Image (cartoon, rainbow, N blue to C red):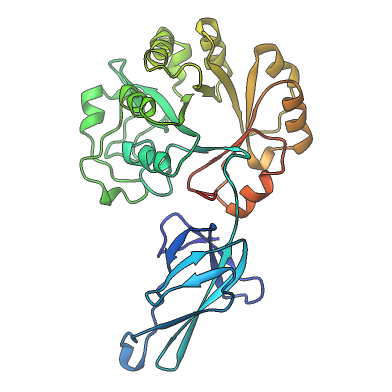
Length: 335
């Protein structure tokens, strides 16, 4: 699958019949622009363009190339100009919200730079149930939101890690990476406080990954700060606290006062006793998810999240799985 340049973050899919033909997808009641480039003699763009839907029960198109999905199915938009034809295939996929919960992974990182306030806001605007983020600790023990451990260089103009930078230093670093980062001026690495303030004002719940390894070491005392900040923003009853580091979860478990704990896994895993003993919910990479084990976890009274599901066709499949929620980098449901 490739990225559709006309719709950032949207996937394009191979046409079911024509090898070199690509389709994109949209949800019922969603409207997107599919204006093609039709080149005439001498490399001149042809206009005006006349649009026709070959399946008007599935797709509606107006004179400007704005296409609206009407119900689930497949259709094509035919665009004519000066005797030339362009064909745009669209899958309308209905992934209703409410059957499963949906989580925005680091906000919506396929639409805006991950773990930034614009990314979180895009996820909230799309109506997610949870917004996921990663807690890291600066050199001077401030709580900020950043994913990578060894270096910030994938996103910021520095080779150092978060642990090697002071709060003032990391806040001053310009963003050089992340989806559409050039479209957002004055981006800064957010603080945990800024994230919680945003979440408190929303209808969604926080999903907070204890990413930093020092939280079970020299900065373990900051777990109490994290817990108290969540509660101070009245988010304790709906917050998910997660980690792929067992030691971080064990450390948080000691001071926990009712927050949901989640164990993140990306390898084969079948230790139900571990989850039940600690009352840890189960967050599993989709390629390692096994339907029968997910059912066992649910039967044990725990919850299941599958990540990362960025394809609406896959999201449709997981609606029938024994899971509680799925995590995505972009909108995969009918919103």
